[in-house]
Length: 305
Length: 306
Image (cartoon, rainbow over all chains, first blue to last red; front, side):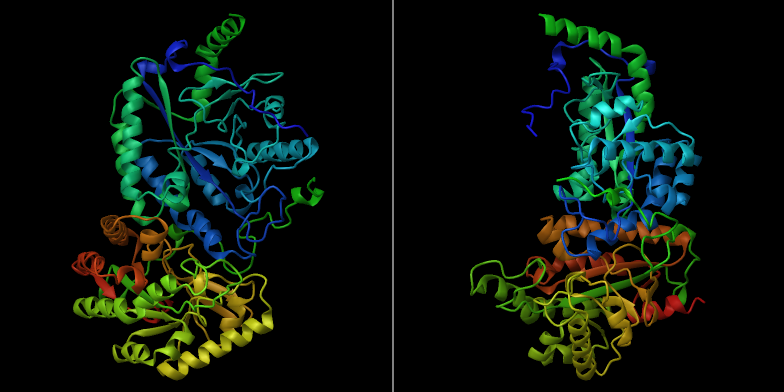
């Protein structure tokens, strides 16, 4: 199969030259928190695109570290979010509905959103045929509906693994927004052959796994990063409204030495008056209703010029 | 290359875990634990004494292993610094603060440097078996008979030299095969230190009955923070203090907690780091209601709750 040289999923649109967007009540920043509620299998089958664990199974350290999130970290994270009135938008491995429904019920009780993060975080989309990827998507959408009553409006591919069919298929299944593109601080239309899809900013730069594990920053340094990112977007949002997402993993943010620092971040951000504390679904809905047509028209005009 | 159809089948997709080693249980749902004398936090310091052989060829990658062309004196001697110099700084700090440590020790190191074992026993510290040496991590492709013999030999050595029962097991680099828990339990091990998925002990099932997994810390390991993640010494201290503050506060409503700290003497025993360790430990022991204990003592108190 020939590989593409660029994704072809969006048009170039410099931040300085694009239509202004607004949020409810004149908010400068739409702020959302996306906990990844995940299940990692101890002994998953091999996908030729990626090994689930570096060592022969059982790879006890990385596996048990992640399991910490469900046993201990989730509850700490949830309580801090509830304290500051932040509803989660859950990036869900839907097998959690079967393995740990107690966690799903706790999220539902707080009116959190669920969107798709595949079936397991140890089952990757790489090398799936179209029929297999459809079967996975149908499983996810049905499981979320049956378990929570919610429609799957959002998508973050399981462990960020894709095929080049992924976005076309999402539009067919009525998914409204993807979290898989990192090219912008505002929602953006995604170019698909049919249907409508937008990207909603879900930041890798703010992601606890990236900052704490991959970049190796300390918990207090992460706090400074999150506050500085918010301050800049809040300033820029006076000109053109912005989105800030904090993607989380309970096994990291829910550790005792981190949770107090995270509480400090939520207190800081929610203490500003021009912040819309919201969910991925609500950001997408507002954007479709108020901005999508206008932005697409501007992008189309640019293509003609 | 395409995926077999069974890649989309999930035979273990049901309530609880996808294996039978332990029961799914959320920390917040557990009965409250009470520590001796009403302590709020049990302080469990684990000191690791390890040997990284010059000719090591581990079957799976080992952090801090020999990494340069043979003979890698750089890495060999820096690791050995911990056993000659670093640990004696740690002894001084812990003695001063009245902290008794559990010592996870490779049996081959115990045989090489018997003076170390005398120091541990003289302090009435606990010995935890840490495998043969760092060149022999247990792993998923390991032959079960070979692993059983290895475990038997390690425990015979450590029990003989220490005169202790040796109740705890920490696999080198916490790496196990599917059989490790069964094999160590068959040799009388009562608790594992490998699984980093909880803040409290929990029952762990083996072919030789139920043992426990203890919350030996991976996140607050000095090697993880200072070497792998390259944090500053001050950030190390901050993380220990932040961890303690959270657990101390939680103990009011959730029952007794465990503050676990893992020390590698070649890391925190360096001259420029030892006072930072002392700062963090002094902060912790400066609070009322902190009970310094070994892993076995903490487990006994935990199991005594009924």
